[in-house]
Amino acid sequence: MSFKSLILGKARSLDDHTLFHKFWLTAVFAWVGLGADGLSSSCYGPEGAFRALGGNPHLGLLVALMTVLTIFVICASYSQIIALFPSGGGGYLVASKLLSPAAGVVSGSALLIDYVLTITLSVASAADALFSILPPEWLAWKFPFSLLGVMGMTVLNLRGVRE
Image (cartoon, rainbow, N blue to C red; front, top):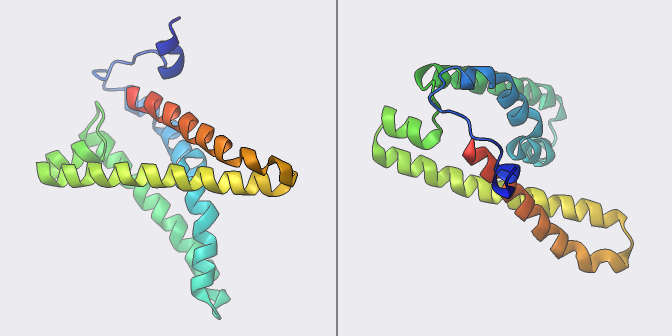
């Protein structure tokens, strides 16, 4: 096994029209529970929402229900996208085909910025949390830890690009 295949995984045929139907549940779990967007949203989103509620904490249940509804709507739209693009298609391809090439470029650029900011914010927050419980003399290792975390997430994302 080569180093490249160890990091990026074995190649999958994108011509296999059943490929994305086999992995739909994995994608949902990864997006909702394990993905960087889900983690950052669950870490920072609820706090921001409850701060915005201010003196109206009774509206918290409504915010939670609307969040669940949003997840169901997004999952339903993903199912339709998988049906329209059975051999795969991210935001760039979907926007380019359904709207216009310019919309695809905007979508791709927005996704790239979102990924970079999400990964950076998530890793920085994890480093803050971890190093807050460690002895103060370990604080010098916080930046190298963060750098290693960003590099690790980059490798994982490269593996996803390969898929």
